[in-house]
Image (cartoon, rainbow, N blue to C red; front, top):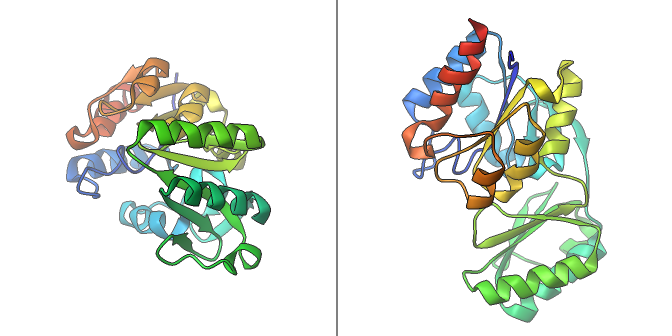
Amino acid sequence: MKYKLLALDMDGTLLTDNHDISPITEEWIRKAMAAGVHVCLSTGRSYDEAVPFGKQLGLSTPMVTVNGSEVWKTPEELYHRDLLDSSTIAKMYDISRKYGVWFWATSVEGSYNEQNWDSTLLENSEWMKFGYFTQDDDIRHRILMELQDMGGLEITNSSPYNLEINPAGINKASGVQMVCELLGLAMSEVVAVGDSLNDLAAIQAAGLGVAMGNAQIAVKENADVVTASNNDDGIALIIRDYILKSEE
């Protein structure tokens, strides 16, 4: 199979634990681009948090942000956006206060948490994602149960200690599918790489689903390939052994 699109999660995948791109990984990404492979950031981060790394790599290709709630045709042109309604955000905020856990919320206008939250934001913002963080497994499970009872939500995580919520059916797989439509590609031509549950849908839908060596167990179990960790240039190995090898 000749793979034509490399969809990369950022935290725990493209980025090392120091939150940077290693020189070796950047070198191999640029080799893939030079060979005509499209490279797409596919991240839970907001646009503002993701685009500097795209610029570092010289990417002009489509980009998936906020776990698929936004798809960018280019780094400067929005293609599609899905929103959560403000009443749903209000309910999720109330759950965070009920259990006393850290929360964050991503809107078109900015990112908010308990340090800069203002109730007037609810009706004056366009919401894309809500998240919770707690190391208390019992509380996190209780929150998950309440979210599932609400319905209409896509619930994933970007670490074992958090929950991330998007509109139902919106995830990195739906985002990468839109990118494929923009580029005239099939999902079978995609290599999707990630480490957390918010990467799982894309890993399962891609032609080659790759889990990082530091990935959560469920991600590894559902991937086609497990590579080295984010600190050991796992992406570079996939480009060398699966993407550029298929070009030969």
